[in-house]
Image 1 (cartoon, helix red, strand yellow):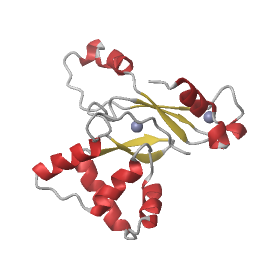
Image 2 (cartoon, helix red, strand yellow; image 1 turned 30 degrees about the vertical axis):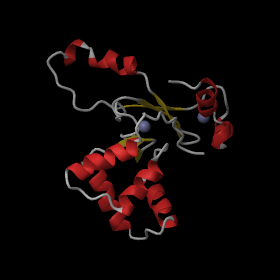
Image 3 (tube, rainbow, N blue to C red; image 1 turned 135 degrees about the vertical axis):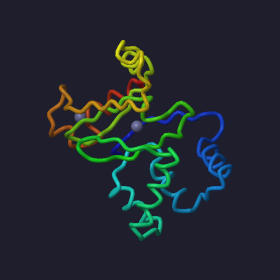
Image 4 (spheres, protein in one colour; image 1 turned 30 degrees about the horizontal axis):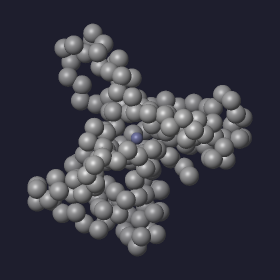
Length: 174
Ligand SMILES: [Zn+2]
Ligand SMILES: [Zn+2]
């Protein structure tokens, strides 16, 4: 249950929408690319974690996985976020407004759990700062790392006991 995030589904299947966009540009949606998208659904994963799951699906060539990751990055279907010192990949297509810039990542260091806060006002506070009046922001990523105050880090090591995850699941935070 690591790397949990809450999915908000738009009316039309977001994956199909992304595939249509690619088709329009005459780009191929290969089985490997589809598999990576499926693996990243609802999760933030490192390349090693993606590769491990790709192997379960029968894709054993690491360079193919890297090439397809590059393709998905280039076409903005996924993005990369540094969390807990590791590069994680994140789907950007789950919602029409969902990009790495539209949510804040919060990570409990003990458990490696990652949740998202999807509150636009949060980031708007930054975007509306006077310094950005004459500045065109192309990327804004906010990552918050720390430890759960209420629990011992030993408790958090058992992912499902982590305070962050419990709070997130109980309150269905936006
Ligand atoms: Zn995310
Ligand atoms: Zn925790």
